[in-house]
Length: 336
Image (cartoon, rainbow, N blue to C red; front, top):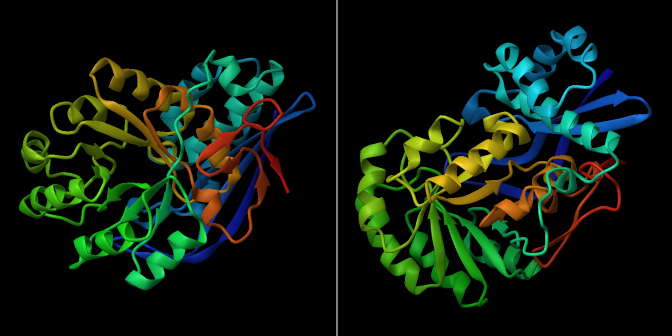
């Protein structure tokens, strides 16, 4: 097996702002694994909140080049377990590697990834489209630019309710709110009452990630469901979210890839938690991998490639929230 690593600077259509940062470009690392005439692709983007850069990911993977390239005929689960001890300090790099290996493995089996997992795709959920924090006029303009059935709205400003009221005046779409740790307890409870009347489906990560006592309070008293994001990073976090959140948003780059994400989804279901997978402004490489998890999810946020001015790959197609799979096997990805 051959390991190939590529670095990209993904250009965004618009400045993307959340409660703690604004970006115009997104550094990304693409892993390609080649074996027996097949190639599998994986992706992980950099993230300052988690102190992960593309050069860090590249170096950690290159350090394992001989171990990676000597791996043959292993299941993705065995491969992940083999790599984890060397990459547990850098789950983003492990994600890109695991994603590429899952893709390669499925292609070698002559199946799409969801077929390999025996998932039924007939009732896949629709993906939301994200509106980052901006002036109200610009947020409305972004929404009008792409009419969509479900919007995720980034909040964490002094005038959050005013923003949602202004957006609601222009659409009947479902709203999801992501405060990215930007609110307090009372603010969350009060906002939830007004936001429910404005057609909001749920609130994502309103409090700081480590405020478990606060999340227990809003879990018990909020009129809207609360979904964990920054509070649910690794597999061991799923059990901690029980009785603190109504659901979890799994990010592949944070948990270490598709292999642990599938285990997290099953664990969440056993605990009665709603399941969601989100993206980190990836290209179609990462987005196409997420698509194969759809049959196991209640909600999905996989609009990352739609936020780019130019995609670096072809894979799944998204129209009005609906995902259409590529005819190719694996994740269906081809680099442009």
